[in-house]
Amino acid sequence: MTRRGLVLVLCLMLSGCATTQWLGKARRAMREPGEHLLALPDQVASDYACAERPLPYFELERNEINPTRIEPGSELNHRIVYALCPRHATEVVTGTLTTRVRFKGEVMLNHRKPGFELKPGRWSVDTFVRLPESAESGIYALEIQFQQGGIRLDESLTFGVDG
Image (cartoon, rainbow, N blue to C red):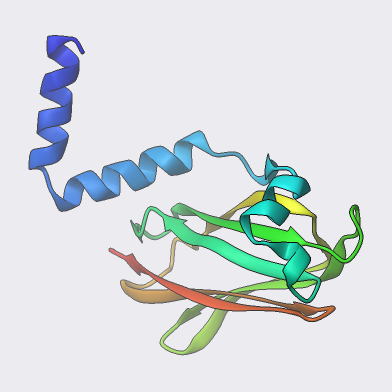
């Protein structure tokens, strides 16, 4: 590692919470919307011993927001990583994925994506959510829901808006 790289790493380590936000912004900047295959179905079937489970078998491996604190009018990245072992090798589970943003208990943004496919294998799915310029400071929740074919997904994460 070069001296300049070492100084950068030390600065980041010493800045604590600011580092977390910087890393969140860096992650968001490096990601593009869409789905990406991370592992083939055979690998996932081995990882989760799917031959011994009722199928389809679904596992939400990661659910994250980057960064976790934003300013009004800014954009955040929501990423899920999931694994699916279907009943048949190439089968998908199709349903409606609903994403909501709540503030003070009220739905502020609501997006429904009918025809969303959960695919066999391990996938990452990145979406981006932009808050309006008028967003108030406070704590917000991003919720996702999907239910179809014996698979249920109902998750929530919080993030902060600093005005």
